[in-house]
Length: 335
Ligand code: NAD
Ligand code: WQD
Image 1 (cartoon, rainbow, N blue to C red):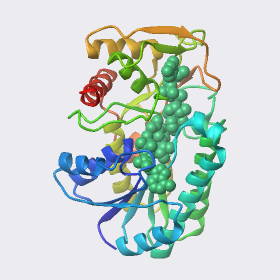
Image 2 (image 1 turned 90 degrees about the vertical axis):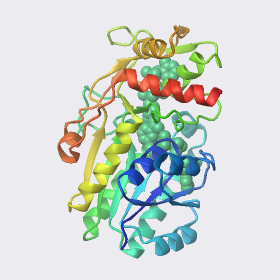
Image 3 (image 1 turned 60 degrees about the vertical axis):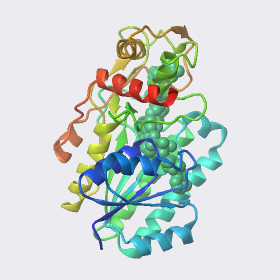
Image 4 (image 1 turned 30 degrees about the vertical axis):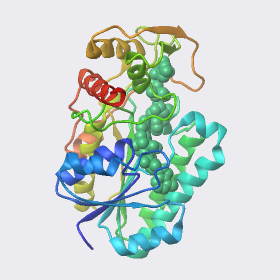
């Protein structure tokens, strides 16, 4: 075994920021990505920001023979598995594609890890596995009821990973349930690259602030929240990246599989986000109150106590930093 970490989906939004953090922490990294939702120039940008070289292999996780060959050659100490499709709406219209990519890709990865005796996995899961939560803040043992095909693909893979951890001596995983990742690298040179209209609130607000879209449609203003708009737990992508480094350190010294919420523990409403973004960009962001979006909860925010205790980590960056960094990145994209 080497000191190498294999990062699937390492050219994507969270994967690229995490790869920078891993390189800065001294890990050797090999990224595998099929660039289905990322750009081929991202690895060069990661290298420039981290000031260190790493290998990037263009590979589809659904290509089992190629993945097995790659794993046998790299022989990583651990794997961080970001590579998946992530749009809730698209998962309703293309369920087969989502199940194929997210389930077959993950099973192939687990198989390839098993073949070379790689026993440490960090898995990207999502708060979407809680569906509409009964209470907030949400602890990890809250009811699981994924309400869309994307969420079901994540839940099924959580279960598969737990089953394998029970059966295979030495194999352990950190299953990380992200709440609402947002923001960008503080350099303004790395961030989220939405294709077409962004599904998520913060990149949409950023495009409106930049004048690329006329207004933000606020999906619902009659929720049981302080101002009637949906409340979510927005976590800075740099805080997520550092949590992955800590998760690897934790796994290296542990025999247990853990499931951890990654959030800040505090929620902000849609209107609070729009106002905070207005402060970051220096002018009000236009919006219009609109109908609810089907499947949305009133409020969804984490109880992050378990991650804080086990990983010796907490989210440090606040909403102002999320908006300032997202705005810097949006200006870079618009330039
Ligand atoms: P992203 O789309 O920016 O990155 C995913 C990367 O994986 C992309 O570079 C894509 O090209 C690659 N990929 C997808 N399928 C692949 C395959 N079969 N083979 C190889 N590469 C493949 O997404 P992200 O926002 O960085 O999300 C990373 C992970 O975190 C995903 O698993 C996602 O489900 C999960 N997650 C994301 C969010 C969010 O809001 N961004 C929230 C919770 C969980
Ligand atoms: C946030 C709030 C919307 C857009 C999604 C996935 C989840 C995870 C994170 C992958 C809600 C409101 C949004 C807009 C709006 N991803 N909104 N106008 O739905 O909490 O979570 O991303 O795992 O699985 O479901 O995030 O950014 O879409 O919405 O008013 O144009 O903003 O109603 O209250 P969500 P979001």
